[in-house]
View (cartoon, rainbow, N blue to C red):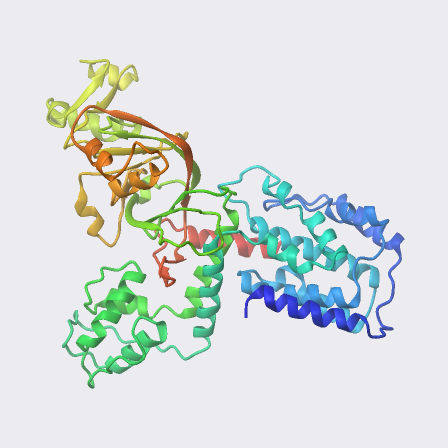
Length: 530
């Protein structure tokens, strides 16, 4: 059952409960509520996350003259929501759900309960809207997105109009991917409740038809994970059967492994990662999706760095399924020493047959040492100095630069997709096509190489009538540099998720290439201990 339906059912139940006599829900004194709200606004605690909630309680209660906000029915509905925060990859402990439930059941100080529940719900709505920790997409405090979605106004309106469900639903990221990842999280939590014994690693790689003593257990594992149909032919005792090869290939593809169908240590290690661990990866993805800025309706390009994958979406903000499958392709991203940064850029123009302007860091660390060993290095690699014939001394002093001319040797290939930014990160084609066949593709200096540049160009230029598949192919042929401005810029989201849902609805998992999962877990744990 979807969360919205469950909330609706709970609210209906609680509305009926409100009609029954209730003698245990004492009315708190407005003076006490006012004191608690003002104390919160004067707290000296500095916010560590993406928002500062110190003045929220006073803003919430002041227009109602500090009268209590919650009835028994609405309080029960709010606690129902908080106790199911796990559906969103959030933790009910962050909102004191258990303690609030005990207070509601046992009575106690009604003013403190009213204020505590309001604080918990405001906290929950803000977390659901912008995430629990400050992201690289929003470095300023408070997060600007809370101007469009003000938790105080949303909660006040939701309670006044009996639409608490709408306030919660509106807080969720309006991306279809968010709902897909939520569904995958629920699925992997279900899997985590089942036995999941470790499979033994083979002494050597096993091809279909080879011996693998735990073949039956492997078959059941593939069926459990959905990589093999339940009605597939089971293997003979101790044999890795050909009928299981397709399941292994599907599993390998979903986990960023070489999908050769061969059973090796790496594949078994991935099969032995528990569903509970996969669920934790999906929880981090939901957190990161909450970080993303609003990009509006229209086309959007998303690049998931650890998955080495790009998706071009016709309507990136649409929560509903699209009639057409998104354009999808493999990418090469920055190596560990030259990580591709996370940011949202605006693709504004393309260059066919571009020059490659060598970044200063690459010039100093790579090009100049190669020139010292080989005086003809620039000439042999179709490179030139700007201004022409500049000396090595000028290059070292920053008085000249190096660029590579368009052509077969050009590092950018035949096309550059430009999204101006201070880091000088962009998407481009590449003559090194073999890199896309590798399972690990963090190989670049930070820019992103795309597998199918012509298809991406067709997506990007689809709204400009003079461009089609034929004209794009003509422009990709060797020739002078051609600059093409986009009629409308396209958001490009550079994203990091080791767990995501693919266009066919299956969960994909990847290695934590930059160690960001570990850092995020530490940050979230530290936040809870404050």
